[in-house]
Image 1 (tube, helix red, strand yellow):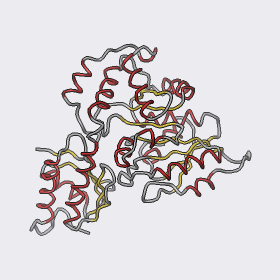
Image 2: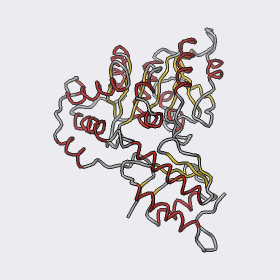
Image 3: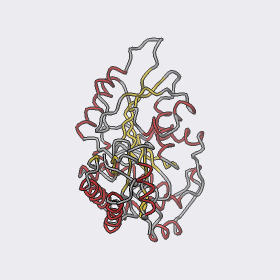
Length: 349
């Protein structure tokens, strides 16, 4: 038996999703002729309160295209958190591929960026300086334990961007989780943003795909950049069909992922483990020897990760994990942390 909590990207298509994929009506999406892709793009755009959408293979490409479309002039930069996925996990693509410099600011523990620091980062119009064009916020925030950015913060960030002349893009790989945690619609979470990229392959359990949304004019320009970076695909309705199925069948069950994450965190805390209280589906916790703990858990049939190679561990509730799986995983934790071996696989802080 294996309980895979390494990420919410490890899920496999359900039987119903496989049937939807097999039955998908397709066309040539590069030519704009795939009806299933068109339907998915329109539906996601409506869910997020935007005019139009663009299907892309990954969230990384969605963010890359958004940044490149917002910052299309020479000498333009974008602002993001130093712990953001865009900066930390996307290989510096905005800079290396598109020539758009990063201007990073510290992320606070709740995933936000101090808005006064954002204000200060926007430099005067002067030939010596790069021109800040965009602020990127991540919601939920991966490295901050799936932190959900508050609605009032998002509203203030949007107002500041309008005041200082920045566009606002949300890296919403797990925005569906943010909406679930806040008890509001996805459109309310995205309300103040000019553009949003949302993943279908995380909490919703699709095999691949993200959708970038914004104004119709923005998406037309983004479509050109998608082609340039290799994101144009042909009969891709087979993937879009999975997205439509997930929106119909997997959205409401995100609540279960959040409940399972809290149950796993509570079980760890009961053992005295230092845990960041989960706000969504990601559980971040510290042990003295993360790699050994991860290895011991794997021997017990539970897959988690050590994110820093030292102490910090990560477990992610997902479509394939039930409450019974959480109980199984906590029994493994109990066995490991109560081991009588001279050098236990993991020691508490």
